Image (cartoon, rainbow, N blue to C red; front, side, top):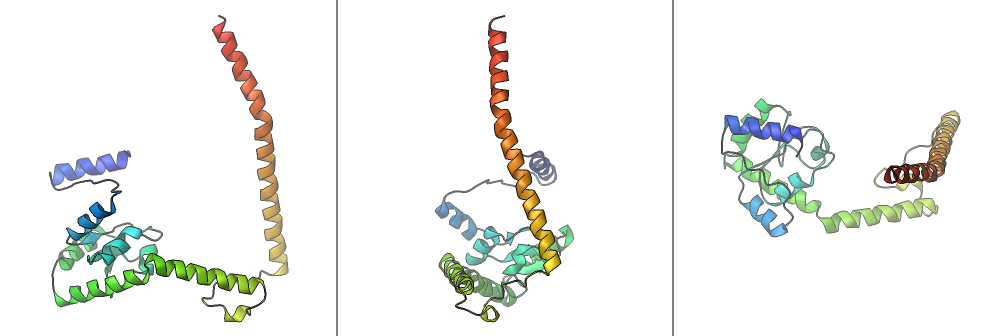
Length: 205
């Protein structure tokens, strides 16, 4: 277990003993669903989360979500469906108390959260990816004009000089990688033979 996690546990135990339960990874879907159903709120404090499946699962389970106002979680967590606040201890503490209120505003957030999570259900996400692949194929085969691409995922080509620099840097990186790989293959038998010789020398002593 990382030292930072152990330190956090010791601090929590010293401050509020018996109030923290670390579940670790929960592999059972039924158990995970039961845990979500037993909670009052879901707090996700990581401001550097690239996307965040757990917050989306919590929203789908009808839990009020408290999340930072930065990071990938903001791609689906908004003020209308979650409690999105600056990632500070004070802001999170105040918002946790607010989210625990079962008032009409919170109920609307939960309903909007369920709708947002359903829009990102796996079948719909898969359909979006297949649609994107179809567009890429049609663009590549010139069956679809680039201007009609939706969403606008096509970047403009680089200027001639910039493209040359990028191409040269890419070629240099590839050549360096090949050189390192060949050197590794060339050195590996030598290292193996040297180790084998040293082991035999040690055994005969």
